Length: 431
Image (cartoon, rainbow, N blue to C red):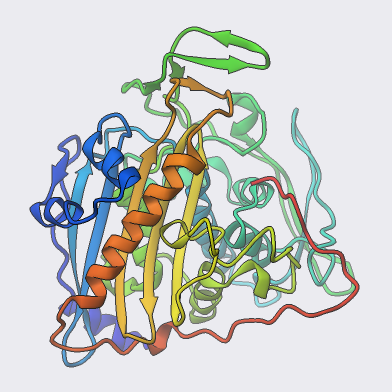
């Protein structure tokens, strides 16, 4: 496997990404988007500034040895144009959590080892048990499953507490992602409270503490020289504040970085060594499963398959009428939605037709310009547009000629089947 990765690194060619602050649009996407007359699609494509639209489409071509080459096509991509990444930040937190476990080099600590979170500073909460886990306890593996399958929020906050604010940002910056910042949990806390993270302990099978991590504090400053504001006002409880919402110190994850993170998991040898994460083959297989498994296939947690249908967090295939995925298609992805932004970074695999491609996009749907009022056009504009975008690219890929059909066996997963038992279904999670 190591030799395969080294060969892939040597042969993979990446088209250069656009420079910081320089929005780029490629002619291929302009021509391709002109072929879709659907009204919602045309509304967004014809008014890209209004919808703060950014898209990256990546063609993947294999040579005779099945080694992939990636060619990126951009549509209005600009790392300085702020969008709120929302739940997409759960992807780097999952990778950093696994990497931190591996760095401890303790055979008795794995991603499945039970863990507990204590509290040691204002605003912190304990997390000792998890009824949705087979063991009854939290674990890194269970946190990642919940964060990926239906994008639950609390698991992200717990991974944030395990890795620590300082380590998160230093690790991302060391990989060259300098325009990224992850500064807060997904609970209401002050900036100072978010600098403090909880003590954590790991437990053996008989309940004994086998490893403890003390509470931590991040003294590192964040670069706030570039001001990121949005909208004409925002709600604070029931009051309207008539000034733009300030995102300057909020989480930031540019679209190119998000897609590169996903690519580093699926095709680790295609990115520089410095941008890879220290993951085991078991970690990769685990991530492939829960990036693509449906909530209704999963036993722990046992999600309600009617509420969390197959395409629930697959925006490019989320048909509002049927909620079914095309036969033979799996999507390895992470989505996010908040403050009127909808974002998806996906690797799409069609095993039946032997087609693969990557697609990432973010779109902003907030007609009234007011933040925090829960009046966003997700259902009427955002989600229908992303579905149309996904289908436009997918149909193009189905007809695109390839010199060699890909061998996609690495991405085949033995998915679970949800058991019929007396446990209640998990519904209405915070995500």
